[in-house]
Structure formats: C-alpha cells, structure tokens
Amino acid sequence: MKTEEYIEKAEGALLHTYNRYPVVLDRGEGVYLYDTNGKKYLDFAAGIAVFALGYHYKGLDEALKNQVDKLIHTSNLFYNVPALDAAAKLKEVTGLDRVFFTNSGTEAIEGAIKLARKYAWKKDHGHDHEIIAMNHSFHGRTMGALSVTGNEHYQEPFKPMIGGIKFAEFNNLDSVKALVNEKTCAIIMETLQGEGGIYQAEESFIKGVRQICDEHDILLILDEIQCGMGRTGTMFCFQQYGVMPDIMTVAKALGCGVPIGAFVCTEKAASLEPGDHGTTYGGNPMVCAAASKVLDIFKEDDILEHVKEVGAYLYEKLEEIKESSPIVTAHRGMGLMQGLEVSCAPSEVITKAMDRGLIIISAGSNVLRFVPPLVITKEHVDEMTAILKECLA
Ligand SMILES: *Cc1c(COP(=O)(O)O)cnc(C)c1O
Image 1 (tube, protein in one colour):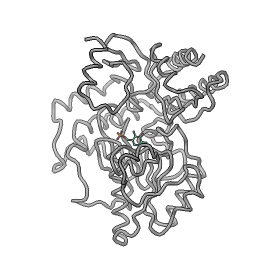
Image 2: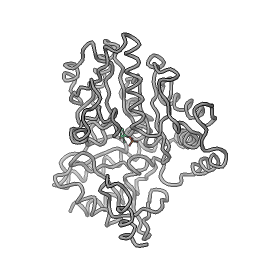
Image 3: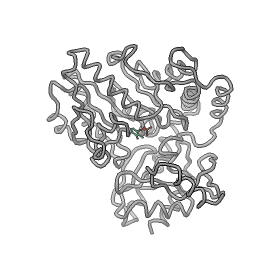
Image 4: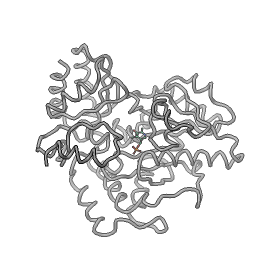
C-alpha cells in the first residue's frame, strides 16, 4: 500500500487524538528507523525516550521471545519469576524498598497518588490529603495524573479535576513553602521536566523541597518516567542531587518498548495493603522479562558510562549550534535529554529534518527535544548535527 492509503485507512478508524507526521514506520535497526517506503531515518526521539537500547539490542529480543514461548500472562493472584527478578533489580538500582508494576507511566502516577493519600489517611483519616504539584509539569493523561499536570490547556475540557491539588513554580522554593500547610500529604515533580520544555531542577530547590518534606512528614514523589533509566547519566536523575524520594515513578525506557511502568517506594511510604490497589496486566511475565533483561544490560554493558561520554559530546555540539544559529535562543538539559529553544515553530525544523532522514521531536511550545537511544555514538551525533544545521540555515 502507498503511504497516502495507509494514512487514509488510519484516519478512517482511529480516534483523531494525535496530529501525526505523514510517515508510516515499519522497522528499526540499531538507531535507525525505516518507513514503509524503505526510507531511512536517524532516530533522535526513541519512541519518546522509550528505546534506550535502540532497536534489536543484543539479547533483548531473545529474552522476550523465550518468555513469549513460556508464558505471557498469569494474574496477580499468583507469583511469577520474571516479576520477582525485575522487582529485586529495580530495588537495587533505585535504593528504594517496594515495587508495584503498572502498564504505563500515567498508571504509575495514579499509584503514587494513592500511596500518598493512604499514607496520610492512616495518620488521621484523610485530613491531610493535599498534593503540591509544579507548573509546566507533565505526569500523564488519566484523571489523577492529569490533575497534577500543570498545564491548563490539557485540563480545561475535563474539569473538575480531583480535589486538593495546588500548583507551585518549579525551581522556586518560596512558592512551594507558601502552599505547604497541615493538610499537605505529598509534593510531586519531575526531577527534570520533559514535556514542559526540558527544565532541570536546581540543586538548592530539590534539596529545599526534601527538607520541607522531612520537617512536615510530607512524601516526596519524583517522576522519573522520562528522565530516569540512565538518560541523564545516572540510573535515575535524582541520584545526581544527593536526595532520595519517598516514592519514585518509572516507565518509558523500563521495558524498552514493551508497556511497563512502576511506582517504587520506601518501606515507610508503603501504605497500600491487599484490596487497596491492583491491575490485571501489571507486572505480567512478558513485560517483566523485558524489564529484567534491560536492567541486566544496563549493568553488564555499562550504559551509564556511555551516556556520560556521548551526552557531554552532544552538549558540546548543541552548544556550538546555539552559538552559530540566530534561531536558537537557549540550550538546556543533561546527558541524553537535551533541548534547544527556538524562535520559530519547532514543527518547521522537525518537518525539514524528517525530509532529510532525521527524527526529532518538540517539547513545550518552542523547544526541540533530543532524547535519542542511549546507545547512540559520537558519529551519530555528528550525523544529526550536520542535518540540523541545514534545517536551521
Ligand atoms: C510520558 C510521561 C508520563 C506518562 O507516561 P505514559 O506512559 O504516557 O502514561 C508521565 N510523566 C512523565 C514525566 C512523562 O514523560
């Protein structure tokens, strides 16, 4: 079929919730994608920070295929080996104590909210139910996660949101302090804001928030769904700040393409008991076999060291582009999660890049976002910047 025919078929059946690029992707190899016409693209989006290991990383497909042949799904009425392996490994890399597997990022956020509310409820039966979230944050599209997402545009048609949510300014400790009272049970934020435009937390801010939480017995929820899993050069971004969350959410790259997320918490915050929460698919053997293998690969192949090296190189190259291009007005980010703020519509640059065989995406209203597979090399960075320069010229 021709591209136009595929698109017509898609738009005839799918709910139109995305303005998609007119490209039908067909297969991936390493850090390249191919469309149904056989056109090749260098992938600097990785399925939105999902394909940390690129396409068909050695051993990952095999681990998944082996599990498919054995058992795809059980139910959470029984134990399964891949889930207990994946949970133990996730405990180890986070330094936290208890894991609940979900099917997506937004569900991990839902769980984190419930955990915080139950923790507070156990203290005084729900008086302290308020949650402080950040402006320009993104935590997902289900009603609870949407309620803590600081974006009026996403919330407006779906009001009322869940109650008791207040919004502070990210990186403004006074604005957080002003909202804290005896009703506050949790503060939620991304360690490095992704969708909002690639804004990293300042060290004094995150440490200050941690201190407020300690003083008032408030739980700190760090959303590492996008910035976690090695993307910033440490397994989780919070590990660069010398603070620990009480609850952390992870998803996107955890399964490198299979739908799995998790919320992970300290023993102290582990308030949920049998009957409080559940999911049919969450933590099934197929997705956990993938996550378990991904965590092994990170360790065995020292993915973090690679991210540090290539991330620094990407930073240098994007800094050069910022200096030389009048369209680029700012450069932010860490590791392999970086952004260039532009004075034109990001989609203009993205479309030109796509024509030239490069996939990049946007964040916020004016940021080009770079979230490539973590296995990208310096040569790939050079290839990307050569195309980007043409598009910005
Ligand atoms: C993508 C994302 C989510 C939502 O994850 P889904 O899997 O799309 O539900 C939540 N928080 C952050 C920081 C994200 O980047």
